[in-house]
Image (cartoon, rainbow, N blue to C red; front, side, top):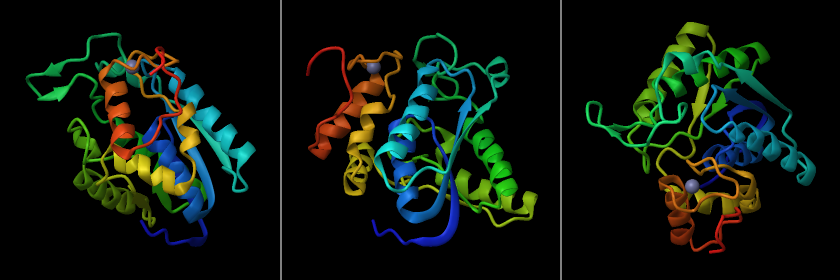
Length: 233
Ligand SMILES: [Zn+2]
């Protein structure tokens, strides 16, 4: 992917602590002059994700010339009282036959994240939001779809009367293509600090659905995952 540099422009990256948003952060650091990150605490099942997000920013700022300007953790823990999801409560990950979505779906999550991020960006006079959402290789979450993001961007532009642009560099990539992008960006090493495992384990279990998808992505990309797993692989 050709990276066009946007000199003198600032971006805000929604950073979860997972592989995709970490790739987006590194992508943004190459593309924009000033990069900030925002992480949401919605009492996710694995709070370890937030520690991972902090660690990733720390490692980037220690090892790279281009630093993350600031990293804000926003507490929206009230959200967990309003919605039921296997991503929040300790319930089994299955398919909801009524909605045809996995029980890990958190209704409205990305809409809320991006709306809050847009308000923060507006305040800081930042025009570019970056989100690691992906339509290609996902579980069909409706708020990850390109149409949802385009529609949300239009709403935010109107509602803020401000020229917000939402970038989704991974929208049409599968897992192995995202991994290859990170290799091209030269920071595969950062994947060591990302969190993927649905069991919340560090070292990761290597067996759950999320770990399997991650490992399959590395295999297809022909690269070694730097993350630690419970069993030596
Ligand atoms: Zn796992």
